[in-house]
Image 1 (cartoon, one colour):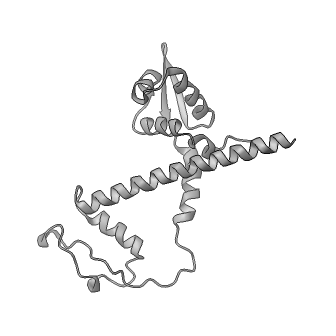
Image 2 (image 1 turned 90 degrees about the horizontal axis):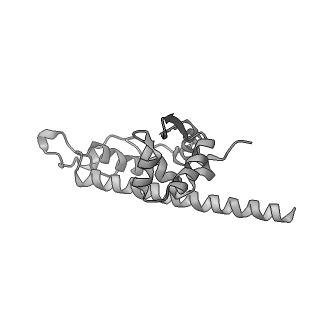
Image 3 (image 1 turned 30 degrees about the vertical axis):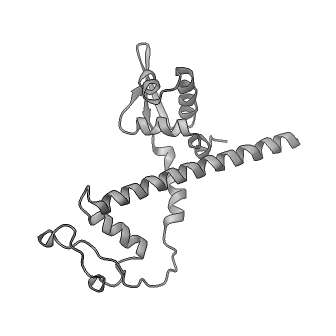
Length: 178
């Protein structure tokens, strides 16, 4: 039986390591410095991440460099997508009661009245996302959406931690009953 990626990423330090490796490979020493934890702690977590296939390691002299291997995270992405996908039998979409930014000639924050938004433009949540996507970078709307996405990420991280804890407790109970 393979290693459960959900259980591996449930631990905060491991998620922090994956975040640091997102853009570039790093040595163990770099990870220790950026995380502010001991080298044995980083090494322990890197071993778990490597066994789960989430990182790869290459030796260069005395140093070990780790890089992110994101393909095992696809199962997590697929699982999450099941919660965000629209149901197949959804009711027809009504016009969206929100304003989207007008073309640049009218100014970056000039709204289009809701009655001018085409029918079937999406559900309210999709409309908010569309409005944020059309907002200029750094605008209050784009900043608010980025903050919301970070909050969702943190909430999902906490939920993953709790789920891993519950699974761990259930496994311990089951082992104890044997």
